[in-house]
Length: 204
Image (cartoon, rainbow, N blue to C red; front, side, top):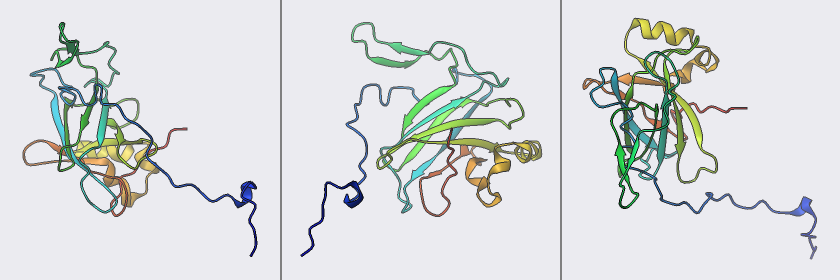
């Protein structure tokens, strides 16, 4: 019987991957996390969809963070919009006035998520988009993607000229584009793996 020297790194077996943790629930999620747009603002839009795993099943415990520019294409510079209970210090939700451009929501039991935000304006030579960060079980590192919007010929022309979309394989660009629904919302599903996998971005 041959004895293997396990102290030699060349003979070490790979260790299994595990989700990083533990995770703490403080302010995750918080009331009004998806209500990014100020109350009653005329440029408000709703983006909603589902987060699916590699087998096509919904993820009921994923977090979706969204950031977007204001309708003029400027990055918001306000300090925050969250209110706290003066007695307990707990979160009461947003004040409904400032637009921070950022929100965080958890998926529900069906893997569904939504945010109400302002329609982002174009920045530079990019078509209007929302930046997205996804946290989910089984992910060692959170994932980044974008949400673009398709509604009319003008939007399609901007998408065709977008420098990031131009680098994405034509067969996968649609995974970055939200579609307007009959109820006026935009649908954007996030597929972590498998058929129709969302295009995720790597920042270097």
